[in-house]
Length: 474
Image (cartoon, helix red, strand yellow):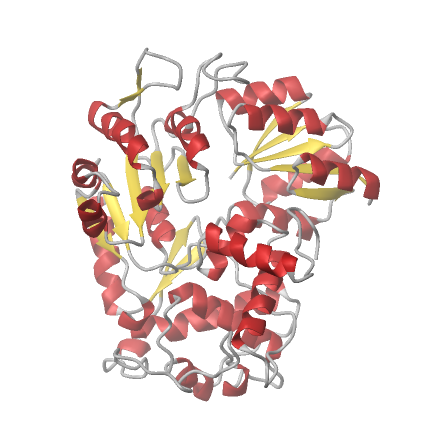
């Protein structure tokens, strides 16, 4: 993860920089806002930390005017409420008090990018996908990774990159669903000075940032069809045009795309270009839904139980055999992301020396297998020996088999008598608090679109519910 720090490093901000480095971030320093703007225009960044003593509002206004969507975090000495409020109102995602807290630095970095997490798989169905990924990774072929939401498509993309000849170069990810249409072209291709109102300097896009490495186009099915034509030319010609420029720029990148939709069907509907699909889908890696890889369930569950015990500072407890059997009764329509959230909840609800079946509670308050109608084979129908196979752990740059990298927290146990709507509201608000008000991360964790999340939040706000603002601490 590429972190840009703007401000003096002769004090607490320097300490924060060292903490970020220890958490795996690649840190670049700029002494003032002007230098910082130059860095982000020329090289890009995944996150910017700015000394609140600087005119952070001017900086945020400028990068937004230039169609730069990089999140900004303000940093200041102590819990200066006025400075924090001013920074958040200016558009900062968070206010980080200094002197820095190591755990808080780690949490903030985690909200942007999860690094050095294991990719766990155990089922023969995943073995087939992983073996194919290893086989094609050294090639230059474009790869399309498909699968339901929550199966781990971005994790697989990083796995391909890490096993390619480009593994020592940049891995740059663009979430096509999270960036507004009017900003995505500049985000991808960059722009020239004067290309539009506010473009006061040249800026490189993600294609140039990824030069020599891998560019992931996450959820490419959400890209506007008009922009798809420009993307097709970039892939075919291996060159791009910055917005406002007629001079092509040669690029050397490997393209990986992901989608949770049937792109052949989207082609029929006129939402996706058939020629672009052919270019991207040289090799298809289909990530099976969790219900089709039964053998992964025990290993993933144990991993998440350990992960969230550590995160919540509670005693680590193993899952009981009955808890594992209870988990196998569910179909997991939300896939690994849903399993992760369920285990996070189970860690918080469990008592005793083990996590028992009573702690396995679904978001609507039911337990796996209760009132569930399914056409799928039950999770308990595991092929002989599958669940006893040794778990594979691959060093990855993302959390274990999940797109979001964070589980939704639970503020309190689900109460008998609550309606589904009430449980849903609690889950959405608690998840948003856990993500420090970041709508995109919350939507990814919940497995819903940004639009759906915003509609829900607008409805709750009209009902008088306080909605966490971006950067607001729970």
